[in-house]
Image (cartoon, rainbow, N blue to C red):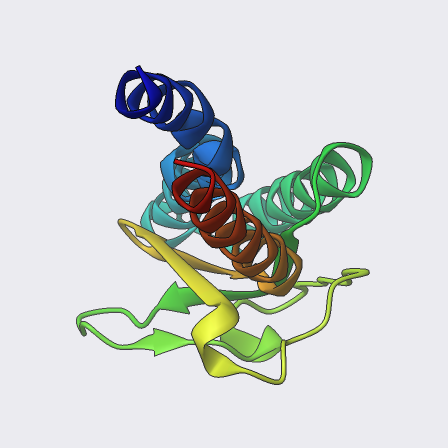
Length: 155
């Protein structure tokens, strides 16, 4: 009966420790990148400075909405954006990639490069700081290991 209890507890407790995998399987990051990509494609397809200026204003508005979305809802958020260089597979991460582009974020580039999540959709790439999520994941992994040790030690 102890083995059955151990198996039951591990099956019940195990899913609780995967709760912090959330950003890796969550789709808002890809949605924002896709939205920015469609606007950037429209910018490069536009004729004339006046129409491009309006599109840059829309991109700036979308960037601000994206930052606000993550400021209000998540432990992670965007700290950088890159746009594909015309006729190339390379991305330009400078604000001069599109004249008039402004991007400010409350998130900073993490010290550990492994905590950067790159989300690329079409002509846009958004860089997210996931350091807090990785810290929570590490903590839950430690708690999970200790829980398993306690449960196995009790049998």
